View 1: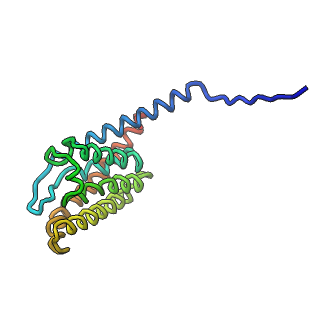
View 2: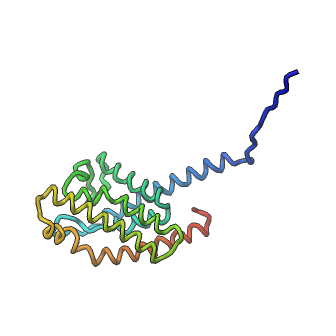
View 3: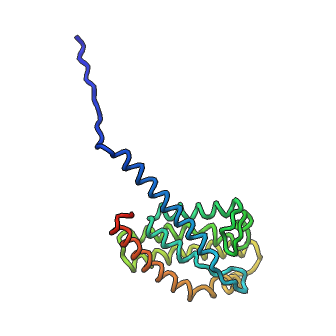
Length: 196
């Protein structure tokens, strides 16, 4: 007589529901931060060089800190995709693919780097390390943005730095420090409330 053994894998009761609930909650958090990025994009100050100063670079690293590198990057990419298809989520209630391939498009398409580095460097909630991560992401954002700006406008490096980088340095430093502080504070608060 043939011996047959059936193996049955037992999962804790309600575990699949818990996983689904966790996934839905993560999607909701990503959607919320995507919306916050869009809202903060409208608080902009036009500057002579053509690159507006906005609150995007404050909320994007906070998204990376709170949602983690992966979640923050996804939220930022979704924001860019919404703008690319024409929704008015970019600065000045603008949208369209032309914004991503235009002279300031490099600053937009490299926003996910700020979220990713902010998230990666903040995993242990170390304030100075988080500042460093956001600073690295922001520096790369300036590099990518400036290169694309030079390529499309024909301006030299000195003129590009004067238009796209130098005017933003003081506020960038403030936003980096503020984003690290607010991001870690919000992350700790939400974690304590079991919302993360």
